[in-house]
Image 1: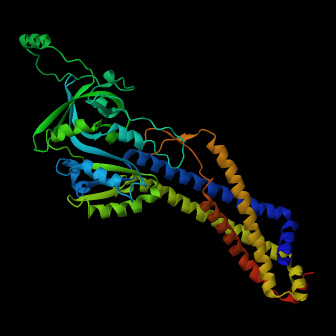
Image 2: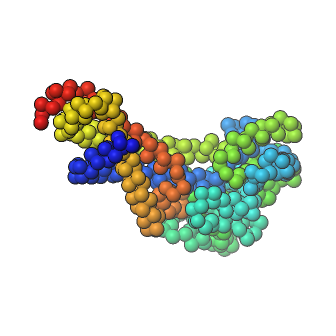
Image 3: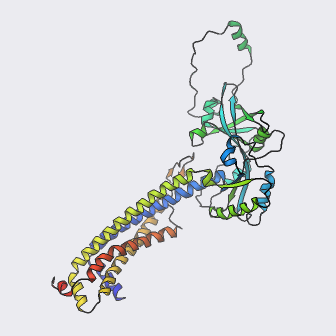
Length: 458
């Protein structure tokens, strides 16, 4: 207790130097915590977006992930409704599971007969009700209302396409797409059409640009099949390559297009859990089901980080920046505290000699200076955390937004600190450890001072 009191008195003796050191430490803690809170928000925000879109896990035919994108008919899940029932009724998975909904991915050619335009596309059939329930997931309490799927309440033959595909198929006017106008047709400079053919062409009925398109795909037997779809909306997909070729349609329509009158299948069953931390337990249980109740067909499970590799790339980039910032702030704090403690030792040489002459051992001198360093670190941590919480609250109520990569809707800028006790505790302990390490060498030098030489400075 005497050591603590003496250390506290010594810190108050030179308030200006103590405040300058504390200011450096507080600034470092604030920068570290604010960026750490923002990094956590980016991670949770991206995770929320991906989980709402594709779920935590997807059950697929074993080889679909590697080879099935070009041939969904050959890699579909048979009797998928039974698979869903087995998963939903499993006593271990049932408490963890929120939504289980099927999807069917396929490729084809979309054409707009009225404009004479077509291109290859990627289509996905899904159940609207299941997709809307998945969009309600908000385990991290962002409070951002989920938008219903664009196919909600639409006809069985309805479809939603990307804005880029709307441009290519020249559906801008029919769908009222902003900033979308086809380029003027160029005269190829060929010979003029004969008058009789021109009159016949003019007399033929011309189709109206009503937003209808034809989707051509290969069936399970290999024969082509065509579906007439009514496009109800064009929406941005966030990635140009996907925006130029994406079509969303009802699952039943997609199954009729691919399988016709045969048994309908799906290419994936999306599973959404209550919490992301339950993914390992759910995967382990699904592996047991694949080897027992569902062993009649080869199945595999993939989580959203495998299906969306950009999640790991983005969070890894922010994690690297956060780690570099932590090291930089730690080095600044280390040298700042070390410089302060060195100055303290130089100014208190006579005091050190007097304490040694009064019988205080070298270990006592060393503990005194180490205690001062730890107290500086503790004060800096407490003040930095308090200021960080205040600034985080101000930022969270400022209404700032940013557009994450691959997303189409802006996300709010939050600094997630309240509730992240682990990060705040780790920052405080790290700073106190840095302070103790910074004070160790000056404390060791002070403890090894010769009594006579120290008193000679009086």
